[in-house]
Amino acid sequence: MSASGSGSYKRIETQLVHAGEPSPRIGGAVEMPIFQSATYEYAGEGSYHDIRYLRINNTPSQLALHDKLAALEGGEAALVMASGMAAISTTLLTVLSPGDHLLAQSGLYGGTHDLVAAEFPRFGIERDLIDADRRDSWAALLRPNTRAIYVEAMTNPLLEVADLEGVVQFAREHGLTSIIDNTFATPVNYRPLAAGFDLCLHSATKYLNGHADIVAGAVIGKAEAIEGIRHRANHLGGSLDPHAAFLLKRGLKTLALRVRYQNESTQRIAGFLASQPGVVRVNYPGLESHPRHARARRLFAGYGGVLSFELEGGERRAEDFAQRVRIPAVAPSLGGVQTLLTRPATTSHAGLAREERLRLGISDGLLRLSVGIEATDDLLEDIRQALR
Image 1: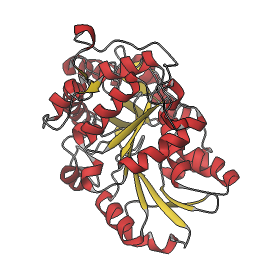
Image 2: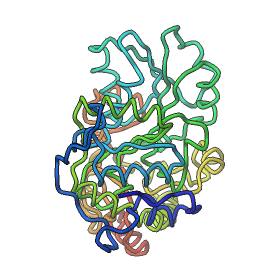
Image 3: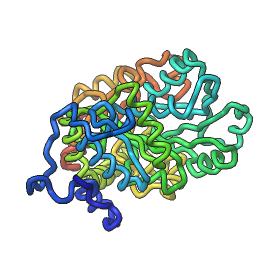
Image 4: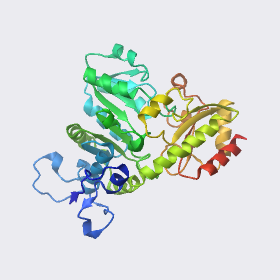
């Protein structure tokens, strides 16, 4: 079985549907079957990492996704894993060794923050948190053993937009591996590898799959780097199972349609919230009031499907609003077809001490809205009645 080449597919909508699909079609099936098998016949492979086995990340379902994701992000190769955190941890543990030092953006997703702050010291890996908006402050934190710099395209839940162009240039000047979590932007809105990043990560649980029914992760980059990450993944064991791979591949085909609709819908909702009395602030890079709106406009094709906001009355008012909305599910995660509402202090950033959350700007009353694909007018009407 060979994969259909992505070179002839110039536009992302076509890549999403056709890149990585088997050619010729298997048994004439328009959709690639689920290969529900962990093991495959030995075919003379000479290396452990070449044996056809599900945990070795080289079975047909996985390989098809690798080709598709590489095409979407413009990378040489890709690797899917069992979760976004599996992709993040495996990538960082491949790039970094005991005694190395990492520069990481302040305000990272709570799971990533806990990984680098609490777990990495046990592996002998040091880290400093940087203000990713102030490039002039980064050099002071460099050490002889600094190996990588890690940022997010847009932060969760405050939707900050780092100086991504500066990160790429700084990494090149100092011989660092530049790594970005592109989950919030998706390749529809931003392509980090084309912008000069070395490695691009996704929690594929979110927009790439888009239906809130699997957990998955991915990393994309140069072939040599991805092969090294795959070897580490083969030992750590975070492989994606065949059925989840099938669902992820299916979800990807509608990514461009979903994300562009969510861009437009979220822009309207953010504007509406910003105009309402009783709304203290709205965090969304598509608003001109956002402190880095100009940067976001330069970097991104769209501003994404997530916003956060605060209401007068703090935590109590936030809980009241969450009880009054009818369409959004009050639930963690994001990026699916359903609109989701959550209070980050109790979900994504519950692992942080309250003082640390407040220092980062994540108050007890902050609400995050992940906008789905429901009718925007229905969502606006629901939000309006909940505010009343």
